[in-house]
Length: 259
Image (cartoon, rainbow, N blue to C red; front, side, top):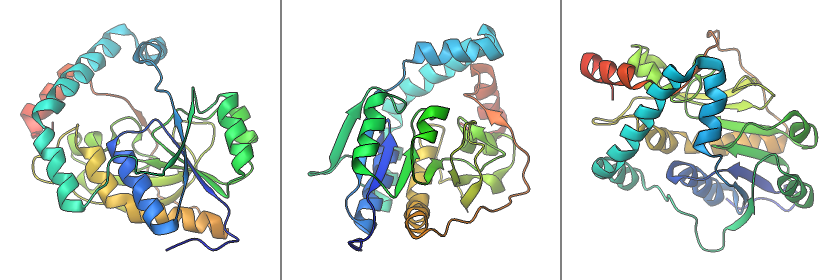
């Protein structure tokens, strides 16, 4: 469906990745061209140092070990992700003609300048840095975020994994929410609950959820453009999660079969 002439442009801000491009390409097919503001990834060292100030280096060291292990495992588990792509008809790379604006950070002057130039009707975040107070204040349109977990119960990292690892299988899913200054604390707008596929693991949950969530993301953007966003009350507790430390990851894998 091609947007009507009176519809304002759509901006997606992201660091990229196959699951994010699957969503971006679905939005483009449904709603017409979007502008992607692609930020440079934040260094892992900066992320870990910031996290260590809150959690301590022992916990963060365990998280780093899991990150390294799962990164190495992606090479051996590639057939699983390829099947998800094929079964769901996902397009996981930028397509010819896609407008991409490269910026150092979602909070950089370059990003703000691009948004002001485009004058979008909606800014859709998907896998990028938290926006600063100044950036949010300077963005004169709804700002939505796609989160690959159920909010507010699984804010932060790897929420789909944690739902399965804690036996909360009914809350394997994803969320689109309004963006505020907190970590995934904005008002929930839409949620989708689903199930992992056979053989899914921490490296494939994001792609699985992206396949499920494409329609929800399209609807959220359509509703933002039409001015009909309505927050919903989930009744769920709020907690922020991180990468599982290696000892927790191995224990959950052996004990629950959740990898």
